[in-house]
Every structure is written in structure tokens, then in C-alpha cells.
Length: 457
Ligand code: ADP
Image 1 (tube, rainbow, N blue to C red):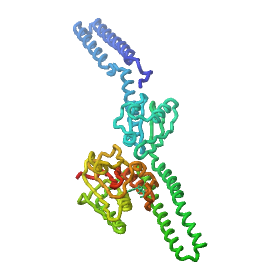
Image 2 (image 1 turned 180 degrees about the vertical axis):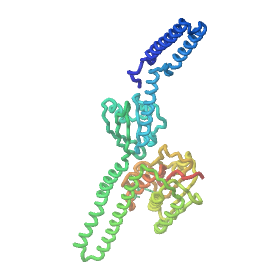
Image 3 (image 1 turned 30 degrees about the vertical axis):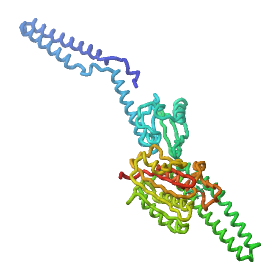
């Protein structure tokens, strides 16, 4: 910024100094010449020596005049002011960049021209842009943010607002746009965790109280009957105790599934960081469910990859996925039939979905969860669980992963909570994977999961 008091003054006024030295020069030269002339007149000096002396004095005087001149005669104050302004602007810019980088939350600075001057790493990641220097309106198309920046600039007051980044998993940000210098500093605080906690608590309470009411009422009814009319009827009492046992089991399953669902929903926006061996998880689930399968006369067949299949994932959560899918397949299979569990490794992105969920020509199919664009792994693992049960009519497929939704096509409900597939969907979404189903009444159902692999195969 140019300082107007300095601008335009031109050369520094060394004229006063120059005229002062001129006068001194004349006086010294005059005195010297007068002395020489005097000496010559009274015969103390020959004319030749007088002239020589005058030349020497004149030379000394000229030498002094120029030798004593101020060396910084030509100073352009306009340039100095411009230089100073540039230096100041640079220092201010560096300060703002350092400030933005030092903030632990996502932060960016928008200059007086509306350009993004500085942005830290989290701001670039959250608002999805890579370079600074362009107009904010071009880089970030978020009306709430643009309005707040305008308002901060025009009112001079900090503006508070919220942004919801819509994705597979919504992200919530509490933001402030505050005027700073000639621009606006914007900071974004990610409070998704708190928001999710709030939602999970509300959902859990609502679901638990609603779903537990029926088995609880039934239990209370049986207790009353056993104390009253059935007091002396041992046969009825045994029957009632069986029913009460199954109601208690149902309550336990409901609580356990609801807790799993809440837990996974809380962390769904944060992808897992560890690795898990999907093949080992499958073998474990098969072994755990073998007794159930045997009891129902269903054979469990595992095929596909030999050796470890390392995916980016949380082992416990993947175990739940595999268990829920095999459990359903057993539950809906006829006695004497088989359930196929396939695990494939190193499948390329373009092929994975087809292998997982698009194999039967006449089947109804749908993608229950699909990987967001951010999942750019080079290779994928596929898990596919196929049964030859009754299948699911096409029209019911879109609702399968809804909480508590259970298809009842007049074939009677199997024991279950209606939460199993919802849990699978949320785990897969957290893992940035895909969850597909294809089903053909009369042929059976196949549930496929695609997960990004941890390393190349
Ligand atoms: P549930 O505890 O009832 O099994 P899920 O969320 O796991 O809950 O499944 C929801 C519904 O989807 C089930 O009630 C059932 O109607 C249907 N379903 C799930 N898996 C299968 C399958 N392998 N074959 C037929 N229907 C299935």
C-alpha cells in the first residue's frame, strides 16, 4: 500500500546542501585568490608561482566540492513506498497463511477480490478442491458458505452457519466466517460425531422402546396367566414357559442387533484403518454356524480364494456381515439344500459388481449400497452368499435393508429382528464397499459384497 505522504516528493532535497557547498567553494576560492594576489602585488610571489598556486587552490576546491557531495543524492520515494507496501503485503499474506495452517480445523482465507488466498489441508479435503488462487465461487459451490462470506464482508461481523456435506454418510460442520484484514477467514468445525451420537441415541431409544413393548407385554401376560388360571396346569405352564423363553430370546436379539446398528452408525463416516483377512472371517463364521446348519439339514460350501484375502476393514464388523448373510441363507433354505459361500480376491473394479450381484439372467436385482467415488482401490475382494431358498419378489428388494423390514410373502415369518441386512448395509458403507442382492423366486437369493483390498494381488 502506498503511503501518500511519501509519494510524489521526487528527488530528495539535496539542493540546499549543494548551494551551501557552492557558497563555501566560492568563499574559499575567493580568499585563496585574494591572498595570492596580495602576495604577488607586494612582490612576495612571482606571477608564475601565483598562477600555479591559483590552479592548485582551484583544483583542491573543485575536488572538495564534488568529493564532499552526499552520495545518496537521487532517491525515488515512490519506489521506496511501493517496495515498502509490497513487503508489508507479503508479510501479511505469510501471516494469514501461517494462521490458516496452524488452525486444527478446516480453515481458508478469502481475499478482498473473493479469491481463495490460503486453505489448509483439511479445508481442501472437506470442500474438495486442490489449488488456491481461484475465485471461491468457482472452487466451492456451497451457497451457505458464499452467502456467509458476503455477509461477513458487508456487515463486518462474524457469521455463524452450518454445512451438511451430503454423501453416503452425511458430514456436519459448524462454521464461522469472520472478517480479517481486507478479506474473510472461514473455519469449519466437524461435529459429525456429536450429531451422530444424538441421532443414534434418539433412534435407539425410539426403536428399543417400540420393539421391546410387544415381547414384554406378552411376557407379562404369560406371567399373569401362570399365576392365575394356569397355576395348577403343569402342561400349560411348560408350554407357556417355552413361549416366554422365545420372547426373552427375541428381546435379547433385538437389544444386541440395535446396539450393533447404533455402534456402526456412530463411526460410519470414518472408514476403518486396519486390515482383516476376509477368508479367515468366512471360515470362522462357517464353523460358528455349522451346528445351526446341521440342525436344519443345510450344507455350507465355501469356495474361491485359497489363502489370506486382506481387505481394508474392521474384523469384528466384517464377521457380523458374513454371519448375518450366512445366517439368513440357512434360515431361508429348505432342508437338504446347500448354501454356497464364495470368496474371491484381486477382482478389478469394473468386474467386481457383476461377479457379486449380476449373474442370474432373470433375477430381480439391486444395489443396496454402492461405493462412493472416493474408493479408488486397484483391486477388490468379493463375497457372495447364495441359497436355493424361496427367493424374494422383485418389488420387495428396495426395502430389504430398511430397519425392521421383513418380507412376509404369505410363507410365514422366520425368527429374526429385521435388522440383519441393515447392519450389513451400514458396515459395507463404512468400508466404502458395495452391497448387492439378486433374487429369483423359485431359484433362490444371492447377496454379494465388494470390498477394497488392502494390497495388490
Ligand atoms: P431378519 O432378522 O428378519 O432376517 P434381515 O434384515 O436379515 O432380518 O432380513 C430382512 C428380510 O429380508 C427378512 O425378514 C427376509 O424376509 C428377507 N431375507 C433376507 N435374507 C433372505 C434370504 N436369504 N432369502 C429370502 N429372504 C431373505
